[in-house]
Image 1 (tube, rainbow, N blue to C red):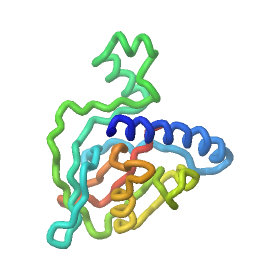
Image 2: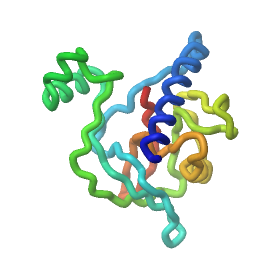
Image 3: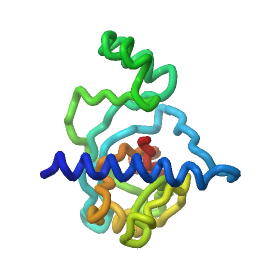
Length: 174
């Protein structure tokens, strides 16, 4: 059942990317990669919960690569497939060799930027809005709503300062 849900979610995202990319032509907002930095961790968020009045994220850190770096890592790890495909599929590559979960405290004023989520309970309402700011409370609601799309299937870039997550950016996956 999980595989069917994941497959359906990926198909919806793929279809929406075709529909929404056509509507994005002529706008000044477009996809821009999150630059890697020492204070940013990219991870799959497995859960969010309140602990003593503070939001805590449980996450599985990953290695995220895009563009030439993705092609290079893909070639290093699976040369035959990389040569056959001509590079990393869809321009990105994820390495997740260690599934150890990490806990991160979230600052109450953390900035959250989303790319794609269920805005209104309809498939039409799942449109790409690059770096759409949402409140932390709205983010918690988005992450708990998996009726049309499970938001835990997306990686997130977590910026950590002074031991707390101060920024959460959803990574769009084509």
